[in-house]
Image (cartoon, each protein chain N blue to C red):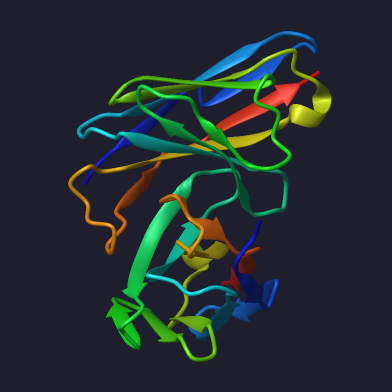
Length: 112
Length: 119
């Protein structure tokens, strides 16, 4: 079953703009992770935020987590054409056996 | 960082044949590996959890007799798609947890995926 729901499903922006993607989940979590997937390729781990953290930064990435609302956001600042990809949030979830439960993803297109 | 490999990276087969996909953790041991399936323009869905030395645990709706999983060692899990049909065409991705990773950090590494096309 899927845990997260990302919005928007698709996002198109110009290079240099910021991109914000949101993710909501249903059950309690230990942590939430964001992944990037280029078309037809494997997953690239971007960032992990723990349930007791509210915000985390990594380069041009900023992730927030609101456990009271069961939601997270991923902000990519000063986007580049190379950021074009699908972005997924993933949680461990309370029923997880260690596997990750993925959201539906946001397809980001950054136009040069 | 830890590396997980998959082989083959892509395969095309005829309907009715069986296909084996390997997932290897190259520089760490993994008692547990996970197999996901991703249909075009969709997200990853867990198929099964592969446990070293024991039977795999399958998600609801995944046929265990069709998707055979063997986790014979701490570094290798195989997924065999038996009697493949066109509807089995998908992107199959494995992941492995580093034994040294604590639950709270859930260090998990993904393979590059295998694209299966059944004609």
